Length: 293
Image 1 (cartoon, helix red, strand yellow):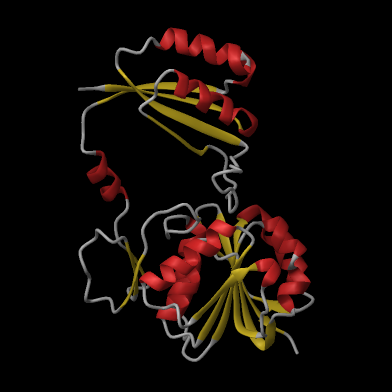
Image 2 (cartoon, one colour; image 1 turned 60 degrees about the vertical axis):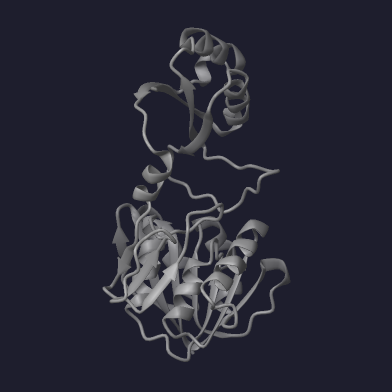
């Protein structure tokens, strides 16, 4: 059996309308993915959030009349709001195996391994986390998360107290705990992220080393290290608050920043930190700073 996959690109405000239309045409599956670069950290099931430009894809049986469907899509959201379209023939395959092949183990600094539950064990990497792709942001594939994991894996975290501000799936907090941090505080504004972090901590037997809470309810002591992989605007808004959470001579690690945003972020944190040279991966950057006296 073969199928057809229709992908339509639109603005965030039209994603729900297209998804509902695809459902009416009995789509087998519907998914959305980013076309623009911004990351999303919020959006639980009852209040979805989409990218400024989103690709909505649906899989149909090959008997579908795509001409009628496309005409309905133009009528539903307006021809001018269909920013791009793509039609593909999809051969029969094992979807579960394909998903598993897409998400395999990742190694950072030849020391830290992030592995989905179906990946073979890698005993040569004693610092291994089991983390399956889920609803909350953070599996290690995105450049900003990879930059942070690489930083954690190349620094001595023994007996350190660390805050992961904007924890997503908890991947950075869990990695820090696995790599020797004494106590890790993980906070996020998204309830889904808090639940995901708690579940992942329990699954990796690291729940005793993590304190997980919603950002608005968090009681956070001064930390040796504060790491935040969030977007530029919240980083700017939280600059003084996060600076107060880092002890004298402590370290600050920031990511989620585009390379073109580095200077603005450096200026925002320079009153409290001596900032080092940025580290880049793709179009993203990581910044490191040391708390001034």
